[in-house]
Image (cartoon, rainbow over all chains, first blue to last red; front, side):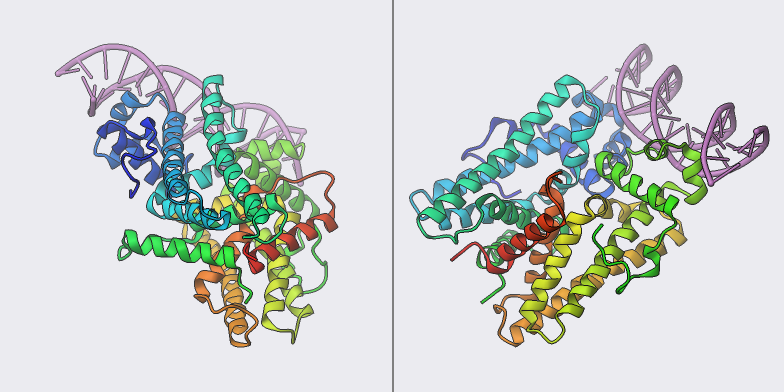
Length: 215
Length: 215
DNA sequence: GTCTATAGCTAGATAGAC
DNA sequence: GTCTATCTAGCTATAGAC
């Protein structure tokens, strides 16, 4: 986790250590086996405990999933905010690049979380939820929308100041974000790759997306 | 389904009508609720029948998933083969574009299948499988590898003949495919969109990926 | 070929001891 | 706070009638 500890840090990012261990373990388990196929027993085993310890901190399995989803999105939001702060006043294309690199880098750094988000969002939308859960899920989905709108605004601004090609803005936005998010699908963590290595990979991916494959 | 019926048509694409109805229904259900959350009863209900009818044609739930996976990959392979045949002798960049558009268009046309493939592949890899099932799954995974290698070869060829930018070839390949596959995540089918409309959308997405967002 | 009935199992959630 | 024991629901898969 390479997220700055103090900058635009949402308070919800600060978890008690035992909860953080549970959420980390849940993210790993959900990534490897999928949400439905993962039992609470399995999450408990990963932290060397049993069901009871998990249920003491989280009401339900869905609650646990929402905690993973939330943490992943907040880590991303925090990092994107930093990228924007660092490029204040720069041309839109440069800010867009900074945001996209921050996004890709966060996917690599908090890999388990983002794979879970990636695989989990669709199913959850259709499932039967209690009102309170539905509300929490909707809030988290808002974070995705906020990010897409932010990128969209940068795309439009870039087309205005001439730093970006005139393309259908919404389509370009989604294709760009889709390409970044796709990293969560094809990337496999390597032991030899440190923070700096992941950052370089993030930049390379964004270069391909912004510059295209054609000469 | 806009797939040519005769060209490079794998025989496995020709299913008896009742089996096709079952696999179509399964793809829909898996897309909406996810593999694990979907019961065989639910698939049966969608074709106006009960469990028994499904189990008569498919031994197990996994068998049904494999049938969906197989059909999706074969539809894609067939369409890509046609695209390659149609661009024989053309510069590599043009062939790459044709393949990518075929891929994107097939994702839109056989949307349910590709969403299931997209969401399902990772989990299945880690699950406990019988030898026979493991073998079938490996065969289907091969189809993905074949496609990636095919795109990779086109990328390398394009860099040779100067029709593509000199980028890290594997990375560029995965980013391109990732961007195309990402369509299965953000696209939502529209009633007003016909075959031609989907084809145009596929072309627009590929234009963004090949040309990039920068001027 | 499709139905109903049911066996057998898994896993979410809770209660109460420590 | 974490444990063990247990209740309960829901689902895969099969058997046997029609």
